[in-house]
Image 1 (cartoon, one colour):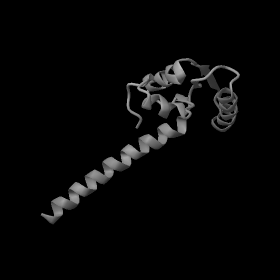
Image 2 (spheres, rainbow, N blue to C red):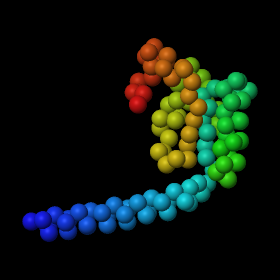
Image 3 (tube, helix red, strand yellow):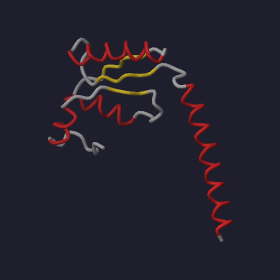
Image 4 (spheres, rainbow, N blue to C red):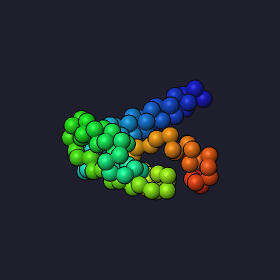
Length: 114
């Protein structure tokens, strides 16, 4: 019985290591294209200015351009909805402010914050 348990553990360890190797390889390739930075505020607003500085630093670190996309309106819920519906591939990020909490408390956002 002990021997079969050892064999199972070795097989699981091998599967884990092979899977980890694939993730490390994928991480080394990221990013391969531009990164979209959604800002739920108007162009030229204080949040937009901060976002552009963050995007500039992120672009310098990752070596790929950050594309700022302003989605203002409806108390920032338009931009937040755009973030929520974005494909979870790491190529779409965004800025959030305290309005994400107040919008939820006011019933403007029908989704959960988690």
